[in-house]
Length: 162
Image 1 (cartoon, one colour):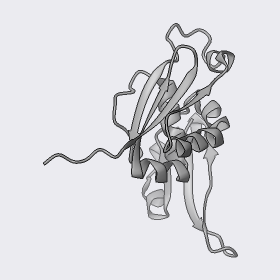
Image 2 (cartoon, rainbow, N blue to C red):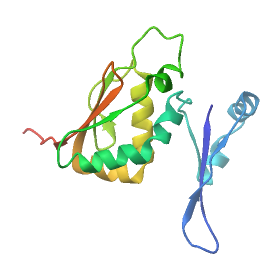
Image 3 (spheres, rainbow, N blue to C red):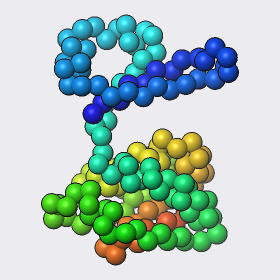
């Protein structure tokens, strides 16, 4: 699934709107054959990100996770997920849902190449203005263990070494 974004200025409110649509493969093939210059000149962009199966679950828990990120300033936070929610997304998978994700300034610090669930969380965080603001000021560590407990810790921003 591919996403289509267009920033347009709304006539009455004066703020920018982002429209999100999904396209079929036949439309994408037709688009690929045509010139993309029209789209680029008119501020229309496509994300190359393929739909992550864990995106709906992370979006469902977005408000709770953002509150936990804010509360992590006072100490580590935890949230218990139901195992059937995470297992039900990919029941045939033999791999564990456990992962560790460290983020700073909207980017993963550690490697999450082999974890779709960690990628889904990172994508959700990158789309949230609140999460982006929090990640700009500090590094956050997300650890989902085998008992489906998500641990969130806030650490001071890493300093550059000279």
